[in-house]
Image (cartoon, rainbow, N blue to C red; front, side, top):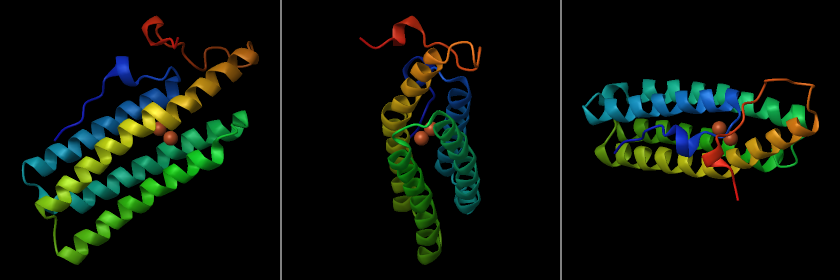
Length: 156
Ligand SMILES: [Fe+2]
Ligand SMILES: [Fe+2]
């Protein structure tokens, strides 16, 4: 199991979000790496670090949604709340089982990897596209706030 940030594939062109996504990937990679080498006793601590980081990241995205009157804000926020609920559920399972079993670790690894990939390529990309287009419409009001996507990332 493993997860790796790929800027070419995952960068969305909104600097603040991209920087946090890269950091999220680094944290998740650290968690999965730690679990792989048997630091099971750190499972809960790492899960709670991750949850705190997600709370901060989601607050950033939700502030950008509110500032830009993003029409998909409700459904996007529901996805964020779902991830935090699942994070807490995994911590509960840890206590119920009396530790991090290899089945639980595998489940958390699969869940995080899948959730992040799908969320970045779906809901977050939609948000970034909206933010970039609304920035273009307000050209001159927020110079340099958001970076342009690379030519290779342009959508057809
Ligand atoms: Fe995100
Ligand atoms: Fe998001």
